[in-house]
Length: 82
Picture 1 (cartoon, rainbow, N blue to C red):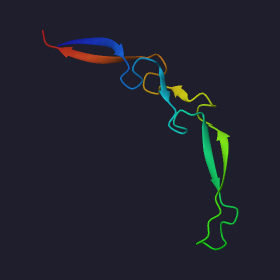
Picture 2 (cartoon, one colour):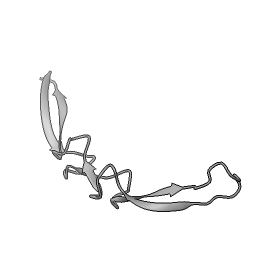
Picture 3 (tube, one colour):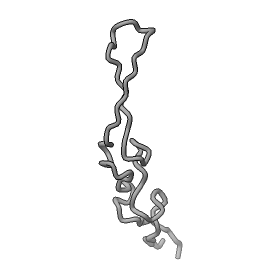
Picture 4 (cartoon, rainbow, N blue to C red):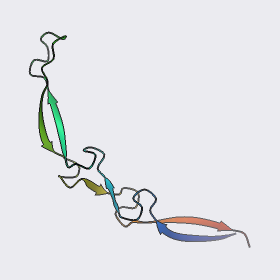
């Protein structure tokens, strides 16, 4: 049996080496919802929100692909019989 390593584009990032940030959805920012009175009157909600920069992508919107580690390439093993 012959083992051949084939290099191809990463199927997760499509060869770019980057993926859309899953925390902010690519916007670079995320909403933080706060309730100023968490223990008072459970049926009344006071939702105050603020916009914060994304802690994962730091307002870029993309992160390095974790599958190819930013190279955009992946190796696959092909087995062939003689």
